Length: 266
View 1 (tube, rainbow, N blue to C red):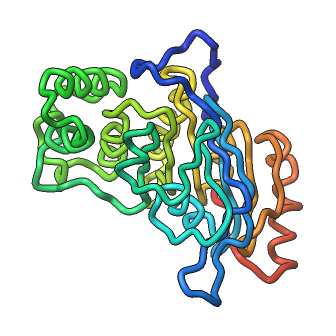
View 2 (cartoon, rainbow, N blue to C red; view 1 turned 60 degrees about the horizontal axis):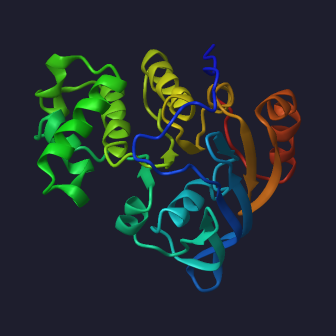
């Protein structure tokens, strides 16, 4: 069982940014005019907390995260960060504003070293060599990455190590908000546990607001604070992690009654 580190108000962001709420209001997404994937979703990722989005297959979970990240066609509603409207912003503008995404599919450059991949995380400030070197050093130390791996080809790392490097790369620009899409998909239970432990520590250690989409429901509930349940592109339920954990059987039974499916992984 993964336990959540105790979070204190003393934790500070090295970037100097102040963590704020990310709020989706009435969010709608349609890849084709007459086929809506999201139909007015309402989710608040509270500052310095882990907000988890779960639901059956086809609920719109990953689409929601892509919409927030500027990668899906938003047709209605708003996404705000600390009251600033960031709806339809480009990913690079979101990153400059403190919002970083780690997508489900691997995005490392396998022929490049881990260090070179981490350098790509600071692309917007790539000309600031001293800053970039310091940021990489800080991230390597924060995630306790073994030194002998830093100059190894990323493609030679295990799946779990690669996912951790992806998360590390997303932290180079010291974001206030981190979007994670299925971060342990395809990993062994041991490696998944290591990834969850790193995610669980982010709000307390760095003050990062985490918005997490995950199919490993029981494991992700163990590190989360707030939970939103989607089904068929709509809000289906919400509550604290403890509340949703206690009602998980009832919730998944409801998915079956609605004619949708989705495995609950431990």
